[in-house]
Image (cartoon, rainbow, N blue to C red; front, side, top):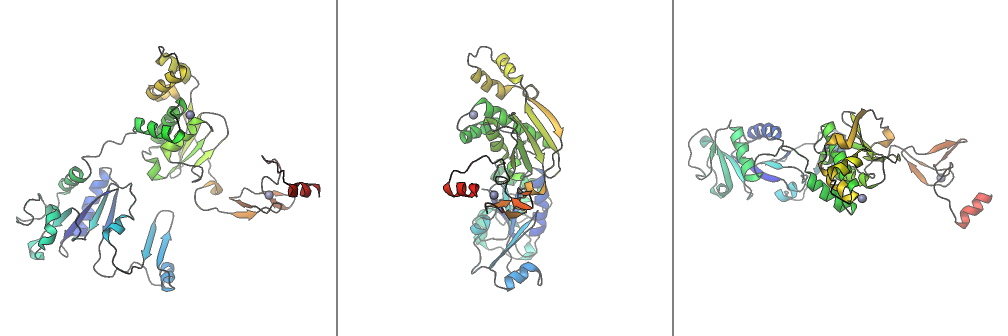
Length: 371
Ligand SMILES: [Zn+2]
Ligand SMILES: [Zn+2]
């Protein structure tokens, strides 16, 4: 779960402005930050006349609007939401939630203090971790003082106290990924090690350090053996999400496509990697164990070839809802995503059009075949 801190203070002391200054500094330090704002008045976010407003006027209690880059939700409440409920709406992968307001919550707080803005209620002062002020004040005496422009100092404090120190340079944690791949696949085999390293290399070459959260990667795997599972573990791409495409080439290779930029790299395990493993661990009698050790340690260019490639991903192969859905005129089964075939003026599924991988043995179908 993300860490949470509230920015509090009297009206018009500059809470929003401070959050606006903290955000770029946190983002520059590699943090993913969400914000929540409390509004004492009944805010209006729906524009009268717009579709979502019309939905709500007609009786919808929760209206969600979604585009390819944003989602917004307006939900009518019987009572004011608890802060915990709001925090549950933030994805757990975030580092920090900055909250504007909610002064009475027992969470850590940054208090912006201006004497002329009025007295602070003593009830909130116990959780104040920092006081932002231009003047000397004895409010929340034990908390450190920061000038309003000392953004770096405030973010240092947030990192030290809430985020476990400065962010680590983003590095792939190979041992952790191998352990995870072994768990998901059922055993840690040389194929898992090569698959994990291949996926890391692919994402590195695309400049995507967080394939699971960025959701930009589509992978074409050319094998249905061990390595394919490892690629799935590292990238989070799956067949069901349509972000993993199986190309039945019988090769330990995969192409990593950045759907945002269109860039793609194809990575293939070198045949010579097997001999390299023997050379790496000549004292190891078991080639399987030699490979396990070598594939963890050998440099990328001894294990893989890398090519920049171009991949066309058609509309009907993209993640998201099916673009098209038809019914086979012979078997009556539904076919999504333009996988149907036109034959003799009829729309058929691939099985009915011929070359099915299965042969029906039921009585009904046999009769049909005779007629
Ligand atoms: Zn395996
Ligand atoms: Zn059919």
